[in-house]
Image (cartoon, rainbow, N blue to C red; front, side):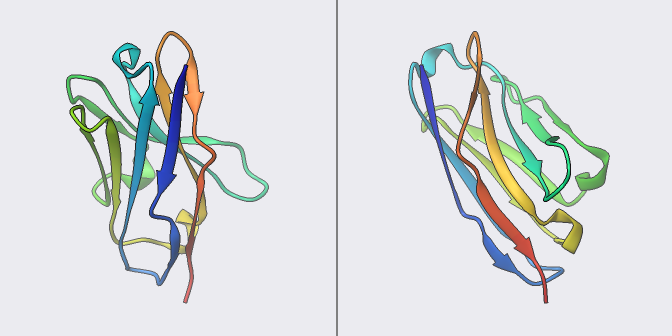
Amino acid sequence: QVQLVESGGGLVQPGGSLRLSCAASGNIFSINDMGWYRQAPGKERELVATITKGGSTRYVDSVKGRFTISRDNAQNTVYLQMNSLKPEDTAVYLCNAFARANYWGKGVLVTVSS
């Protein structure tokens, strides 16, 4: 079992920045890929970014150049630095970890609005 707890969400103006954190606990040695997904009201959940245990990253096109995913394996934490935020980035952001199964955090709300 893996437990994931996100933090760092909130309200930010367009053009602003936020940093999300996701701390993993439990059977952390079995974790391979980690990532961030988001779900906006009335929309399906979509992949935002993933990072392998070795540090290879992948991003959805809409966030490339604005978001950066990173991972601290020693602290069992994955981060999402979000810059140049847009109103369309408003969503609940969920942390994901794959450790023989998919595990999810409860999510944090990010609201981009003036």
